[in-house]
Every structure is written in structure tokens, then in C-alpha cells.
Image (cartoon, rainbow, N blue to C red; front, top):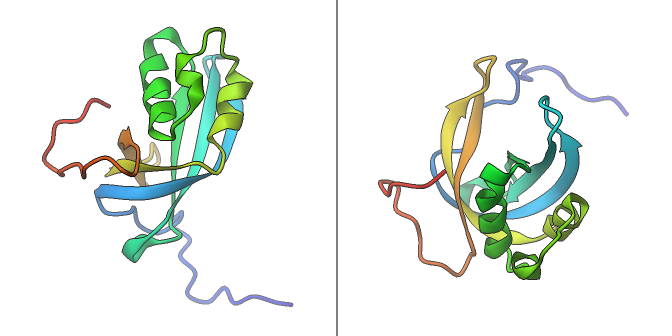
Length: 139
């Protein structure tokens, strides 16, 4: 079966999701390595509701001591019991995240090649109060 390429944008994926808070589902959580050689978890997340339902956004968590607060914030947002664990292996974190739901505040940005993208600025559980767009966020 063929497909229609007429009208397909070759610019790299269209537009970013507008800035705001979105309910997301982690569709894929993959353990890989950053260019620095450090362990890193790549996340692929889909928007669960609203006008952007089904759109994808992405995040990367480099597993260094100075960035573990971001990993813990994400684990808290999905309700993981790993937050009280010692000697947690990177594979455990990656496996724990797949198919979990959470809320995240997204901002619009650009990739290094100038294509539109989204940057995750904060993770929360879906049940927490909505983040205002003018709130100073920690990420």
C-alpha cells in the first residue's frame, strides 16, 4: 500500500506544543549513554488530553550526582517507590517509568539545528494543582 507525500513538511516535524501544563504518558523510557559517556534515560511522552492529545514530547535525564534531583522529581511525579531506595540501578529507573502518567510543564524551544521543540520545565503528579505559566520553575 502506498502513501501520499504531497504536502508533507520536510522541516523536521512541524511545530512545538505551546507552553503550558500537560498530562502525559511515558510511552518509552530507554537507558542509553550521553555523549559524555554517562548513563542517560531518554523519554518519549504523549499528551493524554486536550487539543494536543497524541502529540509527542521528549526529555533526557543524564544520571549524574548533580542531576539526580530531577530523576527523583520525575519518580515522585509517577508515584514510584524507588524514591526511598538505595543502590538503585539505572535499568530499574528506566523500567519503572514506562507507561506511567504524570503532568509536566512544557516550554517551547529550538533544537541545535533550529527546529521547534519542547523543553520540560517541571514534573508533577497529575493530581497536584496546576502550574501557572508565570511561575518560576526549577528546571
